[in-house]
Image 1: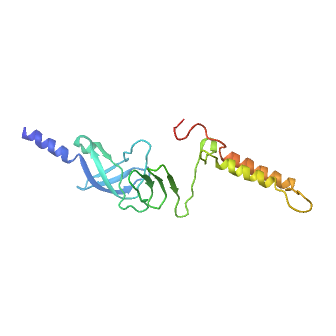
Image 2: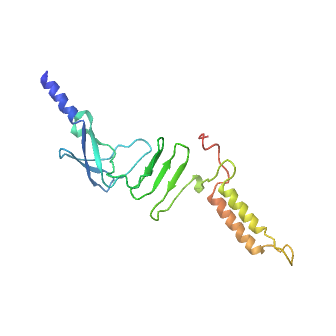
Image 3: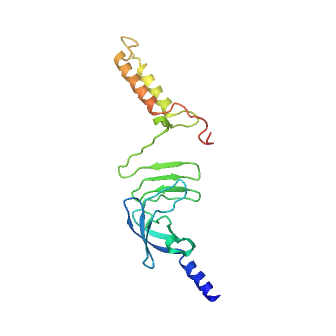
Length: 194
C-alpha cells in the first residue's frame, strides 16, 4: 500500500514542472528546460482563438497523468510587462514587447495602437471595412466631402464659376476608390452579432 502511495505522490510531484523556454524552433514549437533539467519540445497549448509566440520567458509544463512522456507546454509567460497597457478592473489586452497593442476597456472602448513605425492593417469582408457609428460612417463623410468639392462655386465675376470638368472626373475616381475601400453601410447590428 505504501508503495502505491509513494508512486502516486511521485506522479503528483511531476504533474506540473516549472522551467524556462530555451529555444524557439523554426516550425513554431518551443523547447523548454524544466527546473529539474528535463528538456521538452512541443507546441504550446492555447485556448481557442488565441495564439502567441514569445521570444523568451518562463514556462510551465503539464505532464499528463504525471507521465513525462505526455508533456504539454502551457503558454510561455514573458519575463517583463514591457509594452503592456495600463489596465483597470474589467479591461483586457493583447500586446507585444515592441508596443503594439489592442485594449478592450470595460466601458466598451476599443483601443488599437501600432508602435515604433508599425502599420495598422485592417482587412474586411470582400476587401472592405466599416468605420462608423449609429449616426454616420467614414465612407459617407468622405464621399460627401468629394461631392462638395465637385460642386464648389466662386464669388465674384464670373458668378458661380465651378470646378473644371476634368477635375470633377478625377474627384469622381477618388470617390469610387473610397467606395471600393470602405463599406457604405453596416450589415445588421455589429454589436449584437446580427
